[in-house]
Image (cartoon, rainbow over all chains, first blue to last red; front, side, top):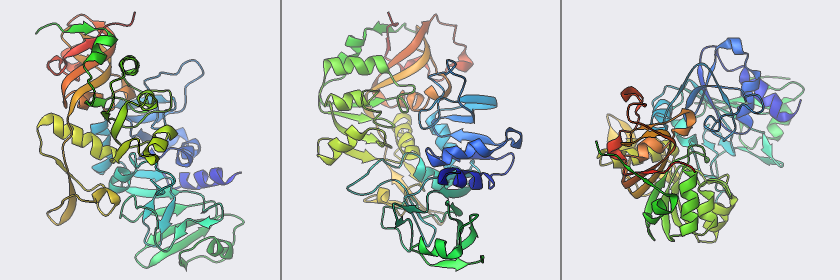
Length: 211
Length: 219
C-alpha cells in the first residue's frame, strides 16, 4: 500500500454514516474509494453537486457533470445540483459536516497553509478558504514531509488558508490533533515508531501514545 | 415579451471592445461559453479584464484568451491548472487578483442585485484581508468585500427560449446564473433554443429580462 492509499484509508475511518462531506482534489479525493456505499455518505463538490458518485462507464460521461477537478462523475439517487452561490452558501453557512483538504504546511496551532508558495507556486485558494472557514470539521490529509522537509511546523511560513484550527491531521506516519495545549500525537500508523514521527516533525508534539 | 435576436459568434464578439471588463461563466471549462470564447480569440480585442472562476487550462476555455495575449487583468479564484497564466503573472504580463471562490460569487451577486458589498468570515487573518475593512457584527469579525460588475457577461446554458428564459443543467450552472445579473450586456450561449413555453416557468433559472442576446444555434 503506498503512502497516499494509507492516508486515504485512515481518513475514511473518520467519516460517519449519513454525513455530507466535501473532498478536496488530489489525495483527499481518494478517500471516497474507501467509504462503503451502504454508509449513506453524501459527497458535495463545490462546483455544484451534492450526491456525487463514481466515474461513469466509458462512453457514458456527461460533459456537464464533473467534480471540482473537472473529472467526470455520476449522480447518486437523491443528488441535487446547484449554482456556485448556493454551493458556497452551503459551505460557508456550516451545512457541510466535514471537509478533507490537502496541505502544504500545518503549524502547532493547527493552522493550515495550502494555497500558495510565494514566488514559486501560486495555484490560488479556489474554495479552500471557504471550506476551512465553514465546514463542521476539517481534516488535513497530506504526506508528512515534502522531499525530506517538514510540513508540520512550529509556525506556518507560507500564507495561511484560515486562522481556524483544523481538527485532525492524517499522514502516512501518524494521526495528530491540534489542541489548546499543542499538537497531540494520537496514533502512529502501523509499523511507524514515535521516534520516526518526532524525527519527521518540526513542531513539538504532545505524546499520548507509546510504541 | 420581445423575442431576442440570435447573434452569430462574430457579432457577439463585436460587443466586447478593447479594454472591456467581462465575466465568463464556467468551472474548469464546464458550463463555459466555448463558441463565444473562440470568436473572441478570432476578433482579438486586447487589454481585457476577465472575471471568472478560474483561468482554464492551456488551449481550453478561458485559457485560450490567456494564450492569445488578450487578458490584462483577471479576477479569479484559481489558476493552478494553467501554468501559462502563472508564467505570465510572474513575468508581469497579467495582473491576477485571487479571490476565495465563495467570496467571488458573492461579490458578483452583490454587483448584480444592488448590494453595496457582502460581509464574509472567509479570509480573516490571511493575505486576502489586506487593505480591507474588518467589521464586527455581534462580536464576530467579517471582511467587507465589494461588488463586482462587468461590461459584458458571456454565459453558457442548456436551453434558452425565444424570449431569453434560461435553463441550466447539473454542474454546468456554476457562475452562469449569477453573472447574468451583473453585467450591462448579457449574452447567452445555449446548447439548444426552444419555443416559448417549452421551458416551464418553474424551470426558468434566469428570466429572459436579464438576457440581451442569444447566440445562434450551432450550425
